Length: 97
Image 1 (cartoon, rainbow, N blue to C red):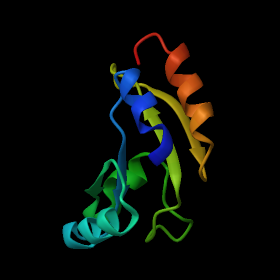
Image 2 (cartoon, rainbow, N blue to C red):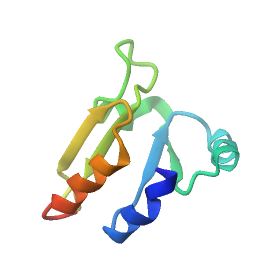
Image 3 (cartoon, rainbow, N blue to C red):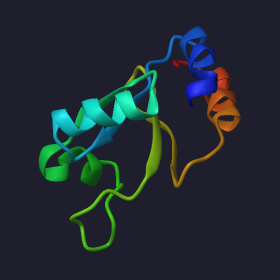
């Protein structure tokens, strides 16, 4: 994502990571990896659960990429880390992205 963040911005897209860690741990992780996007705190994993991004035991996040259109509809959802070029293609072809 780091290498393609400008391409996401060119498609009027905001990129966020969501994780159950604390704001302090997020700040350290962003600094350590020099991430060009924010990490949002998902205390209690409510957001992860809503998007089907928790592991089977439900207490940990299972890395999942979700693209939500401006109308709130899910345009893309996949477990793991799909390549950024695939995500860019989805966004470029979306009517409301």
